[in-house]
Image (spheres, one colour):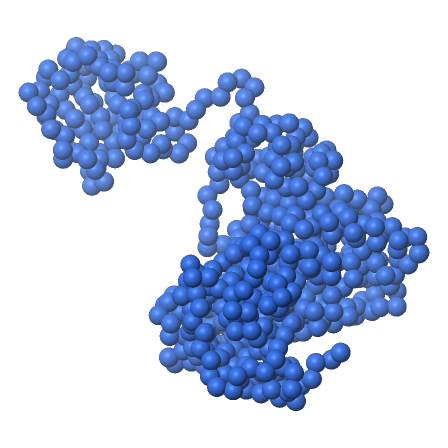
Length: 578
């Protein structure tokens, strides 16, 4: 006799009793009569034979007695006594369908085997708040906004390629910005934790779902010290005039020196929704949504290309007087630093340019990007042969003698990346490249700066020491820019006794800011004896080095328009300082 179970495909659990198949569907319990011979068949490895004349449980009794096995299917067979066999108490294995129910029927661990807790559920709705903003404070010096160094937890779950490898092997091969000796010492001091337990022996073998935390002494690069001007705040949108050099949100080496953190720390504004982004070196109009509903509306405008954007820039040479339209496709060469170039395999783009003025050397150009590709304006201007005057990437000589005009490079993408790194290393300007904390190009710069530290020590000029620049690049896979990033760890203490004291010159009186500004003579960062950055000497970048002559002038929608005035460098009579 054929028995059909076709109507039970959407059941959440299936139980076989003496003469019934009981299915727990979402709306209740369904029961199908089954011929008696079915219960007399030999049971498979996943189902046991019922004894003669068993007690037929009610649905309530079945629910109470049926355990969940590792495949999410419950099998219930009664005995003479109405009790389950002891060997079946853990639930039977099924051949297949359904997902494993969390917390039920998990794998048993042998004695001495390391326990790995299940992964924590992420809450993407959590945003940065005052706990994050209070991790450290700002101070202002030489026209720059600086962040006091602070302790911070980077965290990441074990990657698939790490499973079965020792923690030491992972540090040695994937986080090479620091030496193996550093990680060993950090482990001894409790700075490295596995599943919230300090790890002293880095030979521990990683398993799936291991949560790794690394506490570091973090330094952030300085940014321009200009105030963050709020243009509009009507409860639905927040519009600011972003200074150049400041990233929109935490990413790479930047956390507190970002628009999101500056607004939170100094003006108590949080819970913002990003509508669009500006390059770190670009200034101008930046929109945020105050509510999720407004965010969705603005996102739809962006997708439908109903948001009109106008930029202004200053380029090298005499730009043509007539309107110029560039429609060259753009391809991303490196996602790490956002490097792009014109390429037939790239995405379609369209930018309209119009010259506004020419001072004999450089031109001010109005730019209307009709699409929104990464670095679109900068790449199209480079292709046309008029790169932005101080663009550290697309105005670089690393592109060859033609500097990318007409798409001519004369070298491969790999050679181009290497040439860019070498050029900025030689000029000690790697901070102008948005290189993430993965150690690219950092070892050479650390070695060079270490030599300078020795020279400075010999010259007995501690007043010239700067506590600033690139942070220790470790555990970048944890993505510290995530809105669920953990609070800074307080495990590590100030190690001034063992580290290099990096005090500012007594003649300087910087301004401290963490929501308010006040004069202070105590501007020294904390020093950490393990932190390699604390031992380096780096000159502060000048304000001019942190500004690129590209400004978001206006954003216009169907029923709104936000704009700023033109920057000083966009004036017709402006002349670049020598």
